Length: 341
Image 1 (cartoon, rainbow, N blue to C red):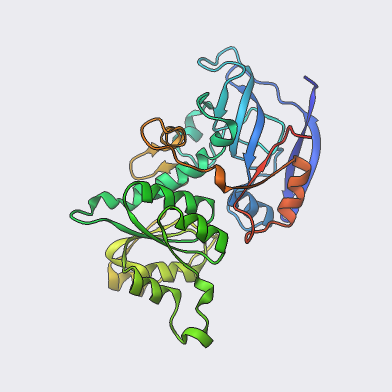
Image 2: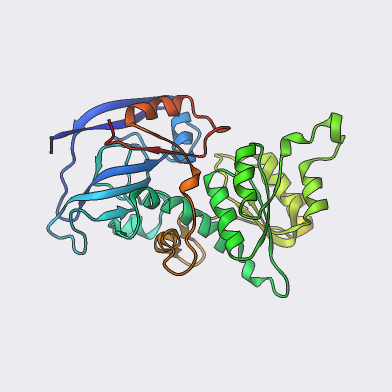
């Protein structure tokens, strides 16, 4: 193996570079992994654009949706060996990494963490674990199991990768789901899971007067026991509050640096605003890495399908163009393959 590798760096907003740097050497408690797959997450795009709260200027960036193969382990690492496929590696916009994905993951950040071995999954499948864990956290924080005597109802605003995964998880759990999404191919994917879909852009004044997609959802689907705001806009937060059943929850997962809380609307409904942390249930201290990986493998039941969410695969060099020309309309999940020429 050569001594240097390619890695992306994000030194400032709207700037990404591909550099040649030394391959990191694992310390006694470290794992050196070869990055096979790294999904471009919306948080990565936000970091590139300068609008996200995470700062990741070092080599490899925040690249955290990763599936990797172990190359070497430190002499104090147990249970992991070269050749293992592992989840939870970070800084993965690079050919190799020793970093573990702990940003914003609570206890791991304080105590240190090791990657998770999952040789029952492909690296592509493993790369979805972070997004699936986030979706699981959203679903759990909704606490829809408190609904008795009828099927719970949920509305998802925004069908990005996590929104689509969340829709599939809720449908697998027997929840009735409706979703709002402007882009047709994402609505088609959700509809294939039994989700009732709405296009917010079709409600123009010329056709519908003052009626909005919110009115249509309330009329055709009804108020929801949980509404998931996955967009990160203040207007969709207002829409979510309008859609939720009095006394129930709006789950705010769309990222934004500042948010205006509509006090009057929340107070009149007694609505609860809940902010699920990425992979850790901040209410119970449970993380979702293993449940997410189990769901992807079908270990304890039906296997969660995610491979159809991959829109394209790119090299590190091509990833720079993907960040510059990121196509929210056309793309769902772009997989970066750092070791592909």
